[in-house]
Structure formats: C-alpha cells, structure tokens
Length: 444
Image (tube, rainbow, N blue to C red; front, side):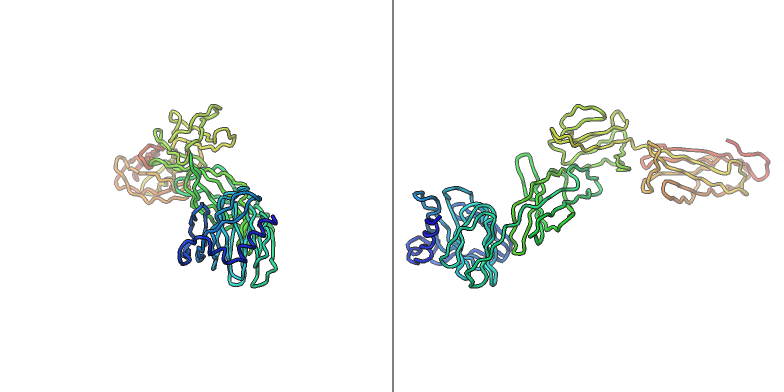
C-alpha cells in the first residue's frame, strides 16, 4: 500500500507528469447533466450523474494501482466541479481501468473497483467506497478509503470526517403472491427499517422476465409500511437501501419476490365474496401467470398454468397457482354466476281496490348468500298478461314495490318475474286477486 500512496502522491505533486500524457482534447471536455443520466467512459467505467452534476474530463494517465510489478492502469482524470457522481467498475486485484476525481479544496480520490461515490457541495467534498475500496486525499495526503466507509472534507480543513456506509436494511412485503381484480389493484406494502444512521430509505422495484430483469422505478420510503402502487400483473423483485444525511446509500437488502396475477373477466363475470362468478361457458384470462403451475380442486397434480380458466363442467371449482417447486399457493375460486330470487306477494287474500298489493324480492347467489346492491337484476310485474309499471326500490339484496289496483270487476292474476341482467330466469311468483263485488277469496 505504501507503493500505491507514493505513486499517487507523485501524480498530484508533479504537474509535468500530466503534461506528458495525452489528454481528451485541447480543452477539457465538459460533462454535465440537466437530469439524472448515465455515461460510459473509454475503458468501461460507468458514471451515474445526478441532475445538476458537472464534470470536466481532463486527461487519461496511467497509475500503479496493483501490486508491485503489475501493469499500470489507464485512469480517467475527471475534475468534479459540483454535484454527485456514482462510479461502477469491476473489482479486480489488478484494475483494468480507474477514475481519478479532482474535487474542490484540493480533495482527490481514485475509484478503482466496485461502487464508488464522489460529491462536491458548496463547502464539502465527500467520497464513499460503497463496495470496493478507494484512495482519497486532501492535498498529497493519500490514504486508503476502505470498502464501507464514507470520508468527507469540509472546506479547506484537511482533517477528514468519517462514518460507515449505511448497512443493508431489513425488508419485508405484505404479500408475495396476490390476485389482482380486473377493476382495481391489490393493496400491497413494503416494510423497511432497522438502520440507525438512515435519514430515509429507497425502494427499488424490478420486473423479472424469463431472461431479463428491468428496473421499474425507485421510490423514497420511510420506516414502516410503504405502499407499492400501480404495479401491473407480473413477477417482481423488491429491494431496499438506506440513505444517510449526506445522500450516501448502502448495499441493497435481500430482495423479496412479488408475483401479481391479474384477471381479465368476460362480460357478465364479477368478483364477489372472494370468488369470481361467471357464466357456464365463460373463461377468466390470467395475466402475469407465465411460468406458474396450476392444479384444480383437491388434486395434488400440477400442470403448466393455462392462459385462462373456467368452471368445471359448469360447476364451482378452485384453481391453485404456484411457482414451480414452491409450496406457497394462490387460490382462485370460480363459481357459477347464478342468481336466485325469493319472490313474495302480499296479502295472500286480497281484493282490489281496497287492498294494497306489496311485492318483495330477496336476491341470493348460488350459495344462498345475499348479493350486493350493485348486482343488476330485471324484475317485471304483469296483471293478467299485461306489463304494469311499478316503482321499485332497492336496499341491499331486497327489491320492493307496490302494485297499483287494476280497473274493472276482476278477478286478476298478478305475476312477478325476476331474471339476471343477461335474461337468465332467477325466480317468479303469482297471486290471484278478487274483484270489489265478490266474496271470493284469492287463492294460489
């Protein structure tokens, strides 16, 4: 290490050495970013510039960064004027390329492998060896900056301030395998914390494909639960990292898998009480289920998940989905879209016009559960064979109406017929009503 330090000290102390090395151009090349951007330097170093960062590419030189006797490393010399730059380099005993930052207040650093950070603010210069060590100096006082350490220089004070790079936080997700209704998104959250020096946290959401992994977004997070909103069906991995007061972030947490299976319902199908109700021939399209396995009912036999599922011979069925080899399952219940209407007409012994005829209709699903108020039904009243307009009111699963008295001597037959929104019969009833000039009692 003594050799490395002396070599770099010579670099900074002897301006003639810089002049002997070819530069990028006659004048420094300005690298600036109005928005966050990524650039790759000759040799392979990858720079991630924050919005507002400003650099000047000064020259290329060679430094002895490996053990004595190893080849010198081509090093990109950059003047960091302001802002933040993250550097990504392969970690190697003998670096193939490196980056030397010349920062304000005579602060300098060499990034030679892994993930390094350089920040120049109004009165502070900060270097961080997030993953892989660096070399850093105030003036010619070069010292190793070990992996996992942040070193700052305030103003012209050559005495550095040091603290550890934030550790990897604890991360959990509320659900790892969820079903997304076609009319909404599942309520998902990621819980993050357990880093003392964290000022905030940052979540990264990656979409996992068969042969690829794509960053969907990064979002700021706070200790505790954080909503994971606007995620389309598919397979994701969620990671988190802590960010300290200087903006330095540490290593990512262990990544958590998240699988969202979406549904595309056919006309007339709906979610109700945790199940999907659909017609006998209807099929539910599964979205984001690529690579999953499926079993049906109580069967322990799994097959490749199909693109759509439906009722088993028109009867209720349960579909189990899982990742291959993973015992955790997502259950999708499918039930016939059956509507039962319990129709009542009162009073049972009635005369017109003196009696008021009340009709009540209670609506139930195939399992006898009350259907919600948003389920559409068609109900009609006929006197003899003629439709009669009535004013239906609805509360929950109850429909009610009063049938106006018909003119004439009677008798009459009042019929009530109820069907679902697709015209499938759900229930019916009738009542015979006596006229005003007879003692006849209405009967069924």
